[in-house]
Image 1 (cartoon, rainbow, N blue to C red):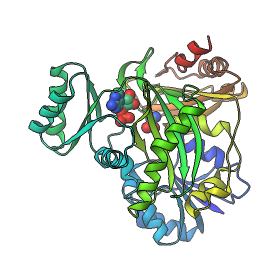
Image 2 (image 1 turned 30 degrees about the horizontal axis):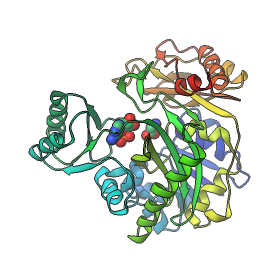
Image 3 (image 1 turned 135 degrees about the vertical axis):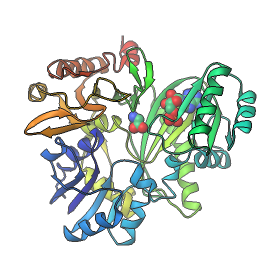
Length: 419
Ligand code: AMP
Ligand code: GLY
C-alpha cells in the first residue's frame, strides 16, 4: 500500500516514524513534510489546500490511503473529496470535523445529548456577549467560534479583562463566540479512534500549554506532554467514554455525518467527574509524539480500519512505560519566532535513546536550521514519569540550539505525585 501523509509538524513526524514500521506499507509520501519526515518518506511539493492536486497525485502514485495530520484540511472537506473518488483516508469529513471547527456546534451537541460540559451561551454581538459575561460571573471563559490554533480562548478574571477580550474578538471577526462557565480541575486529554460506530480507546496524555515553567506566560500550541496521563484513571476514562465520547459518536451517526478518525477529547477532571472542554478532530501536537512511541502494533492497519468501518476487528497494545516529550522552541515563540538558528547534536541525543521529532526545521544547504515556533519535540521513555523526564532532559541538553529554549518542568504534576 502506498500512503500519503499530509502535514509538516512534530505530529506528522511521529506518524511517519510509526507508519514506516508497518509491514503493509510499500511507499510513504509526505506533503509538505519536513527534514525529519524525509528520513521515512519521499517529500512531495503539494499543498493540502489544493484538493484537486492531492487527488491527482493520489491517482498518479497509486496512493491507497491518505493520513491527514492537521485540522485545517479536515474542516475544508479534503477527506470527503478523497472518499468521493475512492481513496481511503484517515480523518473525518467536513461536517464531522465541525466538532473541532465550531465550538458552538459542539456545545449545542453536548446540550442535546446531555454530555457534561461547562454551561455556555452562544453570542453573536457585543451587547449579548456582555450580558452573558454578566450572568456567568468571574472568572469567565470567552472563546472565538472557529479554528484559532490555540489562540482563541481567554480566561478573564476581571470584568475589564473580559470586556477587552470581547471587544477584540468582535472587532477582529465580528462573527461568533461562546461564553462559558469556568471549570475547576486538572486537565487531561483522551484519544479515541472511531469508524463512526465502533470505538477504540487510543491512549491519554497531559499537555503543557503555557510557554513558561510553572505554567506561566502566554498559551502556546503545547510545550511538552507525557503519556499516559495517570490522573485519568481507568474508571475516569471509562466514564469519559460512556458519558462524553460514545454519545458524541452516536449523535454524529444519527445526523448522517459519522465521525471517522481520532476524537481528541480535552477533558477537565472536575469534582463531579470528567467534563468536555473541547474536541479536536485530529491527533494532538505534541501529544502524538508521546502516543506513537508507546504504541505496539501496526498503525497503518489501525488507521485504515477507521475508514473501512472495521475498527472492531483491530486492537491496540500500549507499552506500560511513560513517554515524555519536551518541545524546543525558537526564541520569540509564541510571538514571532527567530528563524534560521542552527541546530546540532540530534545524533548525540538519539544515540542516548531519545527520539527527536522535527516540528519546525528546514534544511539550509545541508545544515539543519529552525523554521518555525516549535522546532523539535525531544521524546524519551522510562519506567516512571520522573525517569522519562530525566532521559528527555539529558537529550535536550545534548542538543545544540543556541537560539532555542525549552520548559524545564514538563511532567511536573505527575513527578510530584510520584514523589
Ligand atoms: P480550548 O482551546 O477550548 O482547549 O481552551 C484552551 C484552554 O483554556 C484549555 O486547555 C483550558 O486550559 C482552558 N479552558 C477552556 N475552557 C475552559 C473552561 N470552561 N474552564 C476552565 N478552563 C478552560
Ligand atoms: N497540544 C494541543 C493540540 O494539539 O491541540
